Image (cartoon, rainbow, N blue to C red):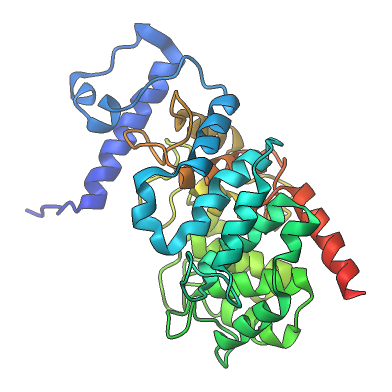
Length: 365
């Protein structure tokens, strides 16, 4: 007799899958639906707060993002080296709904984080991840003052300092190398008209990260992952070199990331659904330019809607708590599924990106 050994992911997947099926049935049939007793004991079902309906509670999410921007709470302790993210996530939500913020406070804080790139906080050395969050935040503000903060020469020197001979990038001095670095370097070199020699060989490095499954991993021979697949394909799209990878295989892998019953995406094969991949996987569909939408958009939007906290904010799956990260990427994924508001490469409002392009093109001339 053969016994299947369940690991933690198997067990969580089974619980989440079962809970979501019955949560959807509850929404479909209302109070008259009574789930089986074993489902009522399922922690993901028990901890889920049902909404009156599945409309998007935009005003609640705006209030949540505004609170997070001004008072991040104890969560900042675990994000001490990534403080600019605590600005970018809620700011992107607010900007997408034209909510005014205190530009000066944001600008002054990010100035203190800037070396040549940006560090994760005051007196921290430059790192590509907080550089990405910092620069995007300044782009979102879309004023000449915010854009003038970005030290283009310093940024160029920073990119050179973390570039490896094959065109890949480490995240910081003596740090790890992965596709995030390549993506960040590419999109900012192109936007700011920096020295294109910085990204020579980068497209080829990205292409080498495509796996047998069709997605892209952090490095060659690593597991395909939704976040790295986005970074790699978005960078290739920016470089107009997406032909270097097998797009049919990427498309096949991507379609299989959407969970048949849940409606949302997972990030890797045999993993659990998570609302943040509404952006990381969903945005790739926007970049593929397919004539037919191969994802189930209605199911995706329904899953995102089910991940709303009644008081504002979104979580990754039922039974979890809302946070700024999932609120930001879930809403980006939601709007991109409707081809609205956001640019799918930079994940900031299109209006902010257009303002930045005009500003930096004028500086180039």
